[in-house]
Image (cartoon, rainbow, N blue to C red; front, side):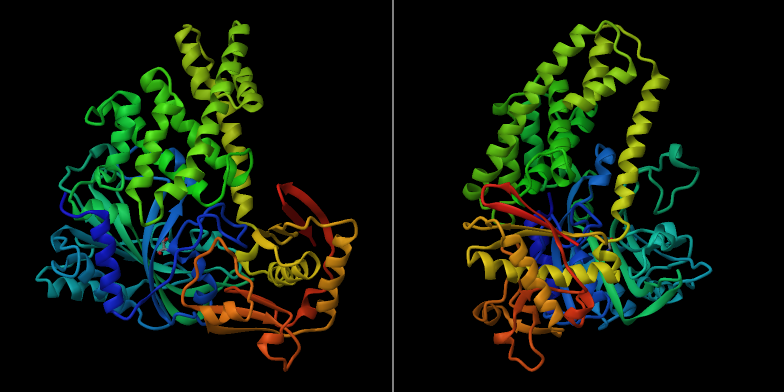
Length: 610
Ligand code: SER
């Protein structure tokens, strides 16, 4: 292998540090205050308030490497380039440089043999937005790319080196194409770079090959989004206060390109995990027949380890559900390859995940003690589920599609296994009925996923912003009533309600709920201004600003404080590490009522308020 993931990280940070960019620490994979997604899915997620115009404490040239999960891609894993966990290497200009500098820098990073990855420019192909009725064609990017390729001694014709596509491909927002964006969401045209591998076009994917062809010859390795628009309430687009650049490139794919091998599972962010899977499953990755299941197992166990590391345990809801699904799906695949699985065979794969990212995301001993017990318990649970489900199936002579689904729904018994058993018994499954059950199930999970994008803080609707400020007041009121052991464990805001989880050694007593509610409303009624300042982290800690312990903060932080008009920040009622957005004055919140205060674990409590 020519370049390792550790080399790539080093090159990336050196390149951007030299180029006056500041590193933004990655955020948790489980986003706070963002009901729109279950997991952090891109590097820009934490930068939304700044792309919309707020000042970033670290300045306006930023970069980072952000762990991401795209759980919606779970079904796509299995080919040589899809994974549910990936790292996004990003850089941002918040109203500083724009298209010219971005595309030139990117080209240098990709092609320079000394300070970059040394990719052969002949292997690079780029795309740009062709324009539609509301946003014009991205002529600037086209002209800049022509110039860049010409300087490298190459011709760069449209349709040969530069390809134009519509919004489906060359527009980026967290919600996708312009029509799907909620009001307040930032987005813009983008320009992608593709690496062309030494692979023949597969005509099964179409007559001619082009960068967005799915045959595997081209791989997208980076996307420069020109974040210059915001969707308005009436559906039109207005220009953002600043022209921003939001670049993201998948570390795994950049690594695959740098090594000129299209299989991301052969790079060293996967290779030793794959070896672990080979040992557990007793089959070899070199055998084409095994590639798909081995990739799925390696990907899912890696993603599961990262999710557990960020505080989630398997359950039947939200992130916990995805975690359970990933673990169980991996186990089903191991079972199929090796006629079974055991705790002893699976844990070494997890150990390989920890080792691969040792010192980057995992500190082996500490994280081992968190992750291994969670995986072990889930494996035992699943073993019991399987036994129970198998007993149930034994009882039924002819299992129809509906019964298979009931088994799945009441015991979590995997459909794939039911199908396998029925096939072994030589029973025919009514394919149509089966498909229609699967479709119904898919439809259900899709609508719930779509609903996630409605409302919420990311739409920056007035109501979610109000609730966001209210969580700061609740946070401080909890300290007032329950004392200094209070620790925020997470929060979640939708347009309908806010949720706030916390830890305390002093469990709330009879009328504490009312006391907290009263304090919050007193502060609201005082009409206190809500302001923010940028401070060195040490100073913010000194003045007692509340932070979220699961988050790593940069040296300069943004502090929102709520207090009397002319009071010093020291005397402000609430001070908190936060990127916003918030109301300008507490009176805008109206009235907050705490609907529920319930125990959710050992010394852990949850508040629902409206
Ligand atoms: N936000 C863009 C993406 O996720 C680029 O960072 O692709």
